Image (tube, rainbow, N blue to C red):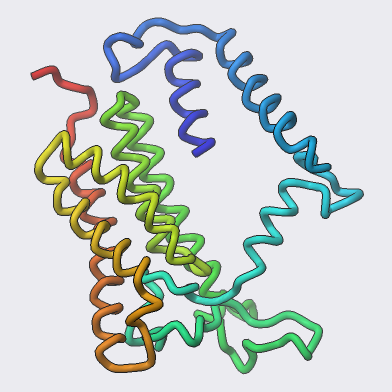
Length: 258
């Protein structure tokens, strides 16, 4: 979400441009600096009681960035119970017993579980490209499209569009995604569905997927029926991303009053 704040803040307050008529033509360059100082200052104050700093190369365990990296590497796999792009007939992720391999294991040998080419999508020359990198690139492309949408439409409706695309992409495309990541999609789709009927499709699909994820421990298992249902839910969630992008592309650049 930090890039969203940066894009909107720079467009409105540095360049004085906005799709919102009430904010267009009202630059306030000082606000860019005060907003940055307020954000960084609040973060430092909140993490200081826990003995953390934003970046601590001398003591990595006390650095917030290192904590994020460590958390991302704690659970490894194509999908950590999420019904997304990686739960399909080719990955074999039809149950929650195994998570699959999204990258080859690193030494020491006793911790290696993804060997023999597991986790490698393809090779470029002699360099193996992991599924983790493929998922990160896919999410990066979707994120750039969402940020472009926010840059062209920074009013309330445009921000909701971009935020929903980001939320769906963050759930559907990267590897190592937990089932709870889908929950961020539901409130955003709900607000859009209230404003415009066609967003009921996104709201309904993501609500069903979120409910199924929440109850997955009751019904997901190593059975053909479980694989079929979870696969259909994963396909539906992934299809919401191009559907949302198409809906966004059809919107005018500027907000039009009715």
